[in-house]
Length: 125
Image 1 (cartoon, rainbow, N blue to C red):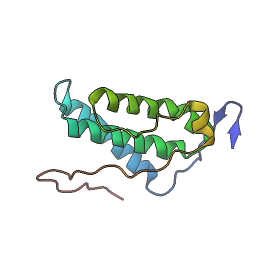
Image 2: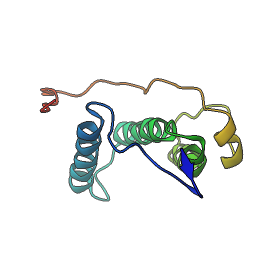
Image 3: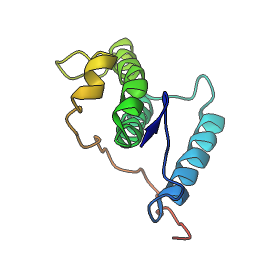
Image 4: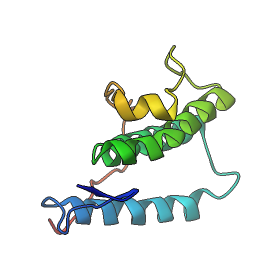
């Protein structure tokens, strides 16, 4: 599936993937606009780091070369958690070479609820 140094993705995504990816990108833009530099709480920062880890793991599942390229993201979110004093796994993040050969164990994102007034996400799926 890889050609040269670059991996090719499928011409067509699995059902719903493109819509969810677009929704994730739009949500990230709205969040960035709403939060600004001083608008973050510990819970919000932790949720964002969990989302980044989940998306990185999902996209890295498309192939070992992509997983290796994204390994720096996992290391960065781990470092951000330490910097913010958030709970981190006892293990240090894997080096990029190791990440390409050994998949990281999947952990469910921590959920604290969606807050008062949450009405759900409406999609055209």
